[in-house]
Image (tube, rainbow over all chains, first blue to last red):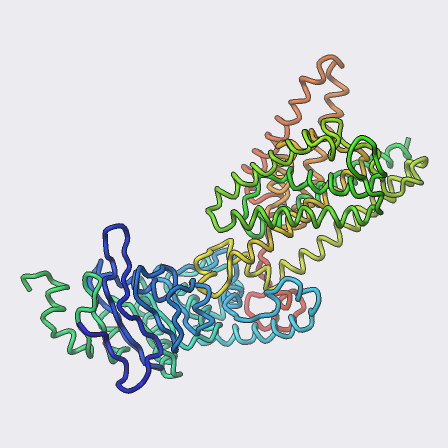
Length: 263
Length: 330
């Protein structure tokens, strides 16, 4: 299977080339390639054990590839750790949300801020006014994001009291605080009640409309079909098929991967 | 009588405040960052000896001292302990938390053995005596001497408290708490966890070194036996009892636990016959253990517990705070 192309003629914004991740003797990701054009939203689907989450963690820097390359806006970031991804404009959410439970919702969002002088130790004593000015601007921005994701009533509550769906929204707010140009969304619909799911879908569409590049892992095919114009299907660590949601849904190889060889 | 009581009260509080300094250092490491340092005694001992060597007059019995002012000794102690913490942290903070505990415990044992055996530098088991005491010229007037030392120690604790509160409520402190809560999530937000943890570890170690120096100068004598693992245990109990993650809790815990320690020593001295006192002194440790158990059962988060720290700009009175719902909730 050739690499999945981004929009023809345009350099991909995110590109993975022949990625391999081996755990012991097992190749969980086995030569996977994928490319996303700037501003594109792509769904990554596949049966359980296909290697989607590992692929996601490779792109997010949580795992280092055994071989292959990850190119972000022309820069090779394959060997960089997860803490540098944001500086390249790449943010992620987690399949099981990871809020900072004892911190308030607002503080959770503020933590997503980038390049704050106050995160440098001595600046807090040497340039307190600068820190204060930046912090006020950060609080205003965080409040805007909380409004956008309808979390304002919970702003000063500890994050541990949030429901599963609210935690997904909080993760989104937290990463948006960093102004990422591209976002890796890991199963944003998992375990979310229908009312919140509509809100999440609406907000993801809004983020896409703002021009952000989005890679979405999701089992909810209805959601993938509503959000993504292109879908990549993974099976046994490789790219099995690609195309529009309708095309991949009719692809016999995809049906076999999901339903077994008798399908 | 009143004068005696005042002198004793000042002495007691000053010693308790030296523990409060050490406890504040541990609170930066454990309470705010979640770094499990079980080698507190090593960093405290290092600070005490560095300051003693820098400030004592030249001695024929060991190398140094250098006769520098007490303030230089304190700064040197904080710097030396901070650098030592930086080295230990640089080697171990990338590893799992339990390795940090093993490494810091090992460091404390190594420091204590060095203090005991490097006789040409440390004076060996006999320790270092005649360490300059602040306001030594007033020593003939115990009440004045006690009050002046108490004032200085209170000023040091207050300055540290204010500085640490500022840091705790700053974006830097927020990142520390985020790393403590979930390092993976903090990394995904672009926070270099190793750098932040190393900074917090070194600051905590430097404060512990300062505490050791302050204690050494106030008592005027130090020996390797002062820096056994029991000291680490005492400081941990102080932090847990007062409230881990809370700077006021760290100070309160130091005073309460030192109070239990000192009062139980007096009670034992008053009740137990002199020839049995050495044995019954172990009851002090039992008492501290019981106090720890009681606190853990009755107030698992300590007397004060960790307060939910929000941005300094969301404190009471802030316009931003007033515009948020539930702004009065903590």
